[in-house]
Image (tube, rainbow, N blue to C red; front, side, top):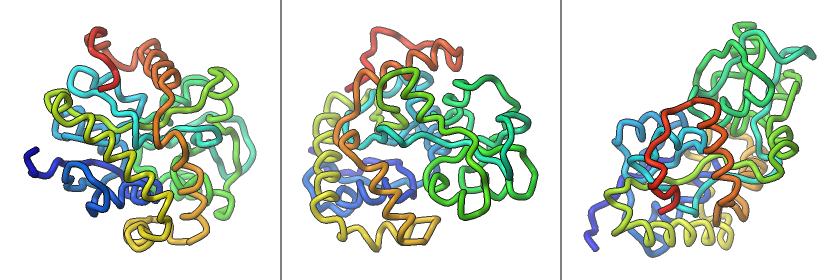
Length: 269
């Protein structure tokens, strides 16, 4: 196999740096990768341009990417109790201007479980402060925001993961690793094995990635980082739930969020 590094997009969040540390640092066998780290909406947009070779993407965004990308089963983010939360400065109805972490994110799609709202896209790490300053009425939080909002004096209005689980009766699929279809035949099996091996290494050696995680984490509190990892890195990071992924993609299509790609193209590589 050619040893030229594949560009590999993932976030700076602790769950990703924890799970992919071993792959990036060649502690497990597999293709050599060159990290491209950014927030999930930026990764979605990069994939839409076809600029990513292997990248994490929101499940809700996958319909826009289906003609160019196939999903891998390992390395994703899914589970029970992992959903985005809606917060405000005080108890109120969900509504008004709601900050969202990007229009293509799974969080933005999940907001539609409650209705249609006036949304204000911004980087996920700016949302709490925007709510606190009164620039928006509510904020849709992902990643570590789930663990920090209460300490900042914000009030929980709704947990969209709970709403999803009750309505869909399956785990919530947030994101997956996608590989460009022109690379999939040659590289998808090896990449999937490498991702799974990296996750297994992380579970077996939880302290090995500590410095790498800390170097990229936006929230430096060690307790928050530990809770973040323990929630979002789980059995579904080893292998996504096929039914849940297909349900999310079908729902996004039904919501009219994209023009359906070629249905003959398989979702998974």
